[in-house]
Length: 254
Image 1 (cartoon, rainbow, N blue to C red):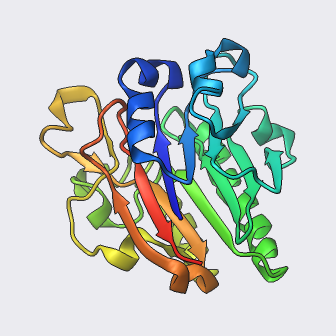
Image 2: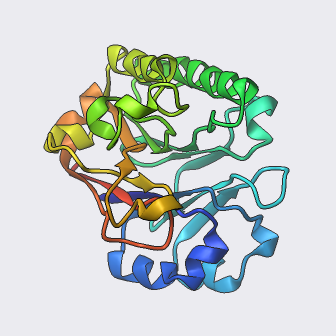
């Protein structure tokens, strides 16, 4: 089973840049997108129907902002929009789908760069999510959490760590949140297979950052420990254009 996650920075813009052609060639079992920036009533049939996938959308109240969508070849057993908490769900950040062997959380984590209010909102989101997914694991479920986490965890995960210690996305208080997930047993699947540096999933549009690979790794697949033996590959597909992020993938065998 192959699962792909991609912050597309606007699904309608991505379609104009070849998203549907890429989707057809890649042919994943499940595709999770973040920052869809669209409600379903704004989307064409080619996005909603022509690919043959079951697809589910959670959009924010604010038009053209945030939003996530999950596409699945097999119909999920259950789908939930949001965490059940209005303060987060109004921004359209979470889709939970139940599949035969796991629960899948497709998440667009908040960005904290605007101001301290948004930073605290982001940190609160991290704190709120962790006990929810821990409880699912304690109940006997396998869980995959994927999406744009908006935080580079270690210095290896961004090109210029020294210059960004006070930048939201690499602040110690944010990185400590990911430390807490790992201490709770969550596993960063990319690092199961890759220890090399200069592997990034996001690049600023400014100053030619992407051609020079001045990037950040902020898109992840985290899994509970019991799923590790089912992982056969995880990767970053930085050759794929169309967004300021690139897709990341996880392959599993059951």
